[in-house]
Image: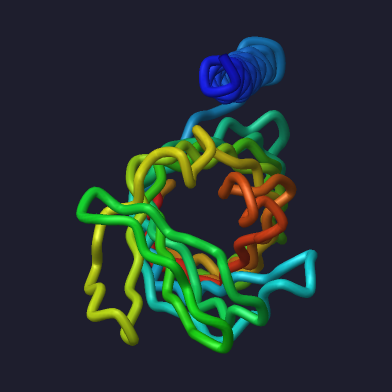
Length: 240
């Protein structure tokens, strides 16, 4: 009976998380369409690639951040201008983010498709997730100086989990896939960035900038529920 109740509780938590994220994505789409239909002056599309470094931080003393990992975020963006230099932005991309954790206590476990591993005290473990990322934000641009425009953008991201991986050097674990009981359906983060656009004529422009993002909710479950994800990326793109 205890087993049934525990699994029912986990299923209920999963359904609640999935429902919350789905409602949030509906809200993002509604806001974007609302701004588009009411204030639209012009629509711009873009594609980008963003090499990034990411890390894990802990709200508890059980873990300590112990390193960064390299990742990549790539996709397309849409900008709906409601004034000459101000736009609502959204899009979709595939991103990779994670970090290295130092375990200050003994007894924590990691479950993968290949086995269950008990982590020893004072061990470092690398964790990394792959996500579908959907942002909603605002973009502000300066007047064009020559062919150059400066910009700033900020907003929120919904990060929907695709798959997670772990590396445990002490136990010869190399990029094994995490079981779903370690991962929430997704998590929310905030972001802000600054950059420069160089006009190629008309609406087309090359874009380069720096973006910082940090989690508002946590991507992991259980004893890892106090872990947060942050990253910094170099955004390179083309606006049409």
